[in-house]
Image 1 (tube, rainbow, N blue to C red):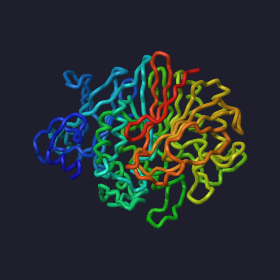
Image 2 (image 1 turned 180 degrees about the vertical axis):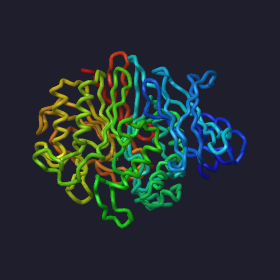
Image 3 (image 1 turned 60 degrees about the horizontal axis):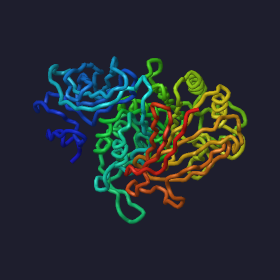
Image 4 (image 1 turned 90 degrees about the vertical axis):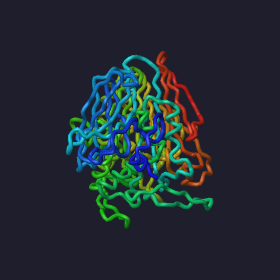
Length: 511
C-alpha cells in the first residue's frame, strides 16, 4: 500500500511515524484531503514558508505555537490551492520570535463548501537566532537518481533518517532534488545479478515533459517514509542543478534524445522551475519570482549564499576562452555582482557559499571534453573559470574572511583545500570546498582535478575502484554537516554515510 492509501483509511499514528495525521475529522467526502506531505522551508529570524497540498479547491490554514500542546497559538491563512497549480499551496509565517522551535499544524478549508475542513497534519521548524549560539546544519544532494527509487525491501531512502538523527537546525539540498530525466521502472538489474525493486507510480515511469510530470517527481519522493518524516521535522532550503530538468542542460538547448517529444530545453526548464517552486517551501523573490539564488542569514555566525549555476550559463562548450564574454557566462553578471556585493556587506563570522557544482573537479558531457561545470584543463583560468577567478580575487582584495564552499553533484563525498601556493592562478585566499551526496542515487567518482585554483584532496569517502553507479544499499550515500560553536565561532565540518557513521571531521577557527 502507498502512504495515501493509509491516509484514506484513516490509520492514525503520532510522533516520527509514516503518517503525519494528529487527528481526523469525519469521513465526509466533501471535506478536502491532504496529499503528499507538508514541509517548512526558507526560515528567517521571524518566520518560514509552509508548503502543503490537497485534492480540491481549498484555502490553506496554518496554526503555529511555541509549545507542542498548542495551548496558545497564532493562525495564518495561506494561499488558495487551485487546479492550475495542482492544489499545491503555501503559507508565509511572520512575526515569530527568533531562535525558537515552532510547531505548526496544516489544514485546508474547502472553497466549494466553506466550513468543510480537512484533517490536520503537524510539523516543526526552528527560526534563525539573532544572538551567538550553536548552529548545526546538514547538506547533500541527488535524490532518486539513476532509476533508484523507493525499494522498501532495502530500507527506502535511509540517508534522510540518518540526517534527522543529527537533529540539524536546517538542511540544504544542493541540487538534483529529483531526476526528471531518469525513469523509475518497476525493477532495475544490479551488477551482482540481483534486482532493485521500486515502488512505482505512473507519473515517474517516463522522462518528465509536462508540468504535471515534473510535479509528480516531487510527489514521488514523499512516498518514502524517511523523506516524509524528515520534511515534517527539519526546515529545508532547496537549490537546483541539472536533473530537475535534464542531465547537463543549458538555456536554449535543443535536445537530440528520442525519449523526448518536446525538444526545447527552454520550455522544459520553465515547467521544471514552476514545479520546483510549487512543490517546495521556497520563498518567492518579490522582484523576480523566477530567481532561485538567495542569501540566508542564520545568526551572527552564519550567512549562507545559495547559487544558481543553471539559469544564466552560456551553452556548454570546450570552455577554453582566454577572455570573458557571452560564451563564458556561468553565474552570469547579475548574480556574480549580487554575490560580490553581499559577501562584502556580510558581517557574519562564516560566509558559506552553497554551489550546485564543484569548482575544481572535471565534469564533462559523457565521452567528450565539453565542459559541464567551470573546470577544464590545467593551467591559468579559461572560459567559465574567469568568473571564479574574479570572485576569488574580489574576496582577497576586499579582505573578506572565512569564505568556504559546500556542494554536491558528483555523487561522492570529499574535502578539497584550495591552496594559492599550488595553483596556477594565485590571487585568492586559501579556502575549503566540501562535497557531499548522493542522498539516494547511484554512486560515482572520484573525478580528476583541474589545477587552476590548486585543489588538494584531503579526504574522499569512496574507494578508487568503486564500480560506477553503485546502488544505495551498498552504503556509499553521504551527507555533510557544519556545526558552529556559539561562544568562539569554531566551525566543525563532518562527513557521514547513510548509516550516520562519522567518516571524517575537521575544525576551523575563524580568522
